[in-house]
Length: 262
Image (tube, rainbow, N blue to C red):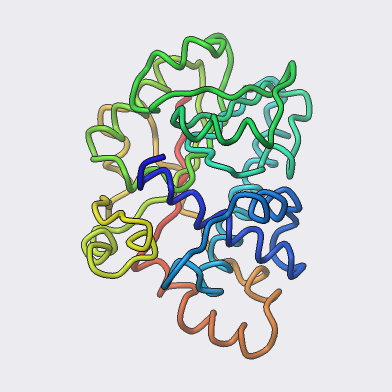
């Protein structure tokens, strides 16, 4: 597993930690996997503040996905860059075809803990390629979450990936998190992913750049650290997180964008 793939253990640790503490995210599967497979993190990557952030990010993605699945009962669900995330178990297929996509080495690891079914499938591929889409019906709408992926793709690679998705499906709804340009530059010197050997990442400041050459339309920006999740922290931790990591401070580094292809 290369260094980029190893970054999947950072959010896994975060989700396992908040779940164990009974806040933000209920994820017993993350606890199980971390207990069995997690390696020793160091530096900022094992920060409880980052763990809270990772838990909140996943909870926001979950809430959006549940709503989209309710609104379109026939759409396929695609989790791009699934890592070891157990979103499939937190939400359930609810009658949808669901595809988790990641690099072969990640899916190999994932198969130790997740089993495919008639509705749930895992696809081994670099998402920048288009061949993996052939495994998914192209006569349906798609609901797509791309969590913790965009920052590892150059802009043209990200645009091409999004264009491939739009070309394959009738309609697309997608939620994607992005670093800002400032955060990408700063990441070379100060980012938890440095602790697993990654320093080269990319950011965008204008969400409309992902409309270019993709077929997507920017719909809305979402809050990554909503107050209702911050309020699940205890008194002093809530105050520190809100003032140091939440709201506008978070937005200087990290953004969450929703797009649609009609």
